[in-house]
Image (cartoon, rainbow, N blue to C red; front, side, top):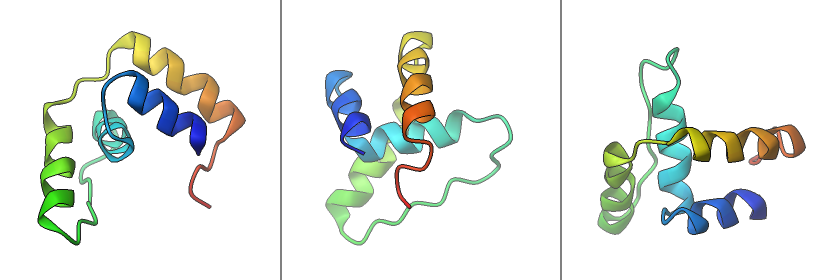
Length: 73
């Protein structure tokens, strides 16, 4: 989990924005459900709509997924 947080911070995103942008970028996903309980969380989550994961970011996510395939067990 810490590795994903570090990556998000390194690329200028919050962990939630990185996760939501990743899910939204998957071609098989038809709906991305967010779980905001405050207005601040909602605004942060909606900010992920403007995030495009570059190939470089995708290349950094891949190895993390191999090490931490389920970051939220």
